[in-house]
Image (cartoon, rainbow, N blue to C red):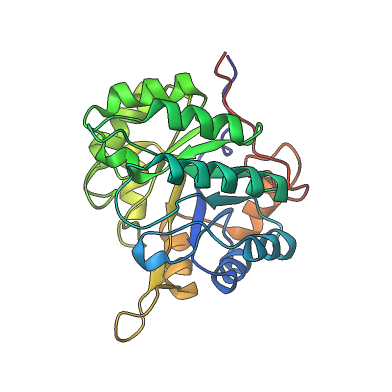
Length: 267
């Protein structure tokens, strides 16, 4: 059983959730290591437009994960919504994304095993990320084992609370349980003033966030380069050294060649 190679010792890498092409390009130019593209970030994110996904893949040199979420609200989906999500997963895979972020629950606080298995099959070998629907699962330890067994490569989680900082202890427990078999990706309210302590407490080598500010009147959140620069300083990131290490087909980010990120082996 082979685990995904992580970042070089001491390095913390950053995935940016971008709600638009503009934000994705700004995040890439600001030093992001991986992108998650979605639409309607204000509602937690929905599946992006294919044209937007094509453009981000074309105009950045970063791995791009596509969110698959058919509607806002909860994560218990009808058969029709699952079918729509699977169609999106296949289409996004064909466009050359580096990962599919999806998730579904069964209405009883458990993973929808049938839906997740279908997502993994539809991804055609591309890593599948179980998104923050995980935070609504009652038994997270059991859910981690289920997702690993189903072939999921990564879990995006705050540990349960609204922010990863509040859930740091739970995230650390998931990291210990995972033992490198499946990646635990902290996300939720990560900013410059809490990122360093979160990394120290959890031992995670990747963090996830939109790193955005909100415009007047509750406008759509937009990526904030100043906030992101402060975050990088807080985790001691030297982008010049970092980009030297992270380019190339064997890098933990999969840059340059747009290689699909290596999966955790599940057999």
